[in-house]
Image (cartoon, rainbow, N blue to C red; front, side, top):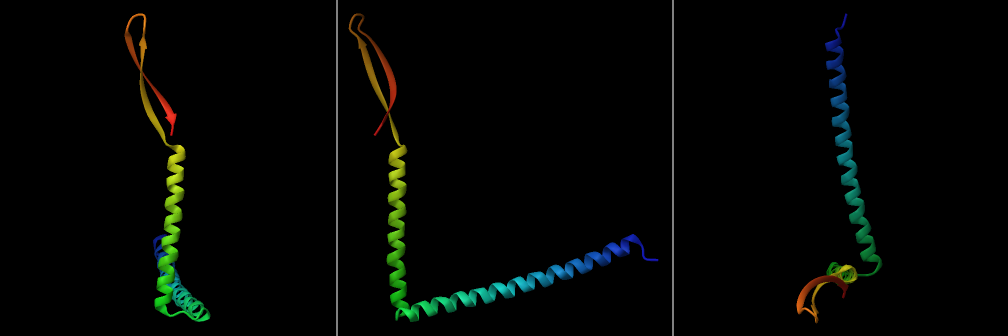
Length: 107
C-alpha cells in the first residue's frame, strides 16, 4: 500500500516536470514570436524600400515628434491645473491695522 506521503511526493514530481515543460514551451514560443516580429519589421522596411539607416532616422524623427506632443500635453495639463498662492494686505483705514490674507488665483 502506498502511503499518503509517497503519493504526494509523486504528485509533486509530476507537477514539477509539467511546470518545467511549460516553461520550456513558453521560452520557445517567445523566441518564435521575437523572430516573427523581426521578420515583420524587415518586410515593412522592404515594402517601403528603406535602408536600415533610413528606418532608424525615420524612427528617431517620429519618436521626437511623439515626445514633443507628450511634453506639450503634460505642459498644458500642468498649466490648466496650476494655481498660484497670492498674498495681499488689507489696510483698515480707520485703525491703520494691516491684515494679510491669502487667496488662490488661477494663472
